[in-house]
Image 1 (cartoon, one colour):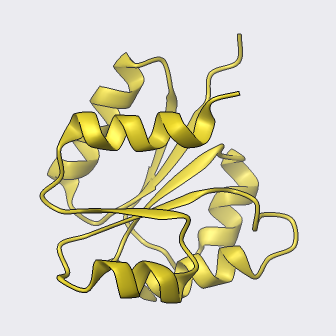
Image 2 (tube, helix red, strand yellow):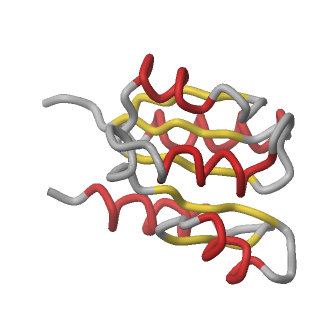
Length: 121
């Protein structure tokens, strides 16, 4: 069986490490990025099944990076779960055209459930 692929954009090394371990143990293939300006290249290279996107990420931020993806004909179908500590996460996720969102600090089980919901065949 092919492993599902998750691409994570976050500039917090601790969060990246924790999420990577959790999802790799869950049987996913994980790729990480600490910048978002090259989202299209990263997606083209890794071909993820889902993307986790932090709001506060260099160089262009999560909203702009997600918009780039959602406006791209080849990649707009890839679900994006928006992750941020911002109080206005609902509005941010909508303006970014994200498919779903989860607030930081998040419950890892809740994050896994959200990802699984989008990736169930």
